[in-house]
Image (tube, rainbow over all chains, first blue to last red; front, side):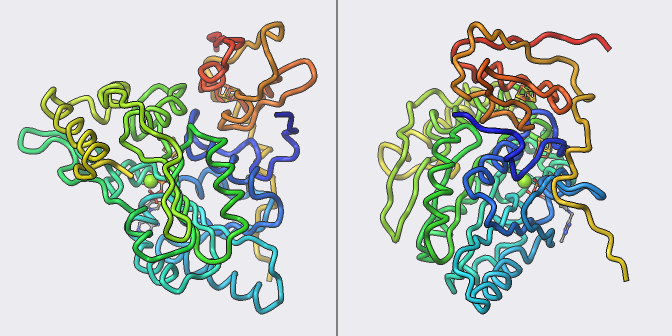
Length: 292
Length: 82
Ligand SMILES: Cc1ncc(C[n+]2csc(CCOP(=O)(O)OP(=O)(O)O)c2C)c(N)n1
Ligand code: SF4
Ligand code: SF4
Ligand SMILES: [Mg+2]
């Protein structure tokens, strides 16, 4: 595993929080993609921490776009490359869950339906982190955010997490996968595979966030792994409609995943039991609920 | 018209290492050069050389992930006095 820092296409000196999962994901993705890549980055933490004027952490062509239109801008670039006879450059969207699950979803759905030649990487840190931790469609059930407060009437988000991966799957795109910031060999393999496929590809990557999930920064990788081990985050890929589960859960109690995160500190014994039952039900009977 | 722009890779001017309040201490005798720390470091601050893992303290923010993922516990975090 020898490599040189000077070869990195996403360089040191970005301004993400210490221990940021998104920074781990982006560097891993760039190591797998290589130089022949154009990045379209939706407004988010990743955009702010990587392109703080007058500096840039990117060594490949890069465009910052709004929340709504990352998939559309990427489509335009892919079409222009096609018109120029370029069949080698990979056009890649990097966007957060707010941009993907919610605000950019309408356009992304159209782009998926037309099967445009775009690789879309969502790093899912389960809230609008850059503007101060507001709930998104990706925020899990019962999690505290600044817009899903813990009070006497309600405690945390009342809705279950939106299942973006399955919604994307219903668009019949050629490649869909999930991964996390704690499974970097898996993530690398998926990016390398997706790079070779033509058409719309989505990789949805769980991205622990120190500031928003409220845990000590050394636990980023461990939490991502616990999300999979507990069965809350499903590690799978769907290639031309064929599903493969890449990693079976170990059924570690969900409580171990919740405990280090202060966004879940108000959870009662009954809450944890309820979520555990839903997860068990999902993996045993194909009913119940998981996160992704 | 001059359009202001940031040149590629210029973020390396930001010496984010000044943020940290603890830092990794790597025991080169224990290091097996597996690269786990280097692949997981959010800063890309670690390089595997022929002598083992090497931290660039200009960028290390002291998150402690490298110590957590090292399979042979060759990394310990030491507090730094400011
Ligand atoms: C239409 C619009 N609404 C609000 C904002 C303000 N804004 C900028 S980044 C951001 C949060 C982004 O959340 P997400 O996509 O999950 O990325 P994260 O910051 O969590 O990495 C918000 C709300 C905006 N730029 N555009
Ligand atoms: S707020 Fe979260 S996602 Fe944003 S830079 Fe900090 S750790 Fe990363
Ligand atoms: S403490 Fe964090 S930033 Fe510093 S070298 Fe280790 S993983 Fe990288
Ligand atoms: Mg987010």
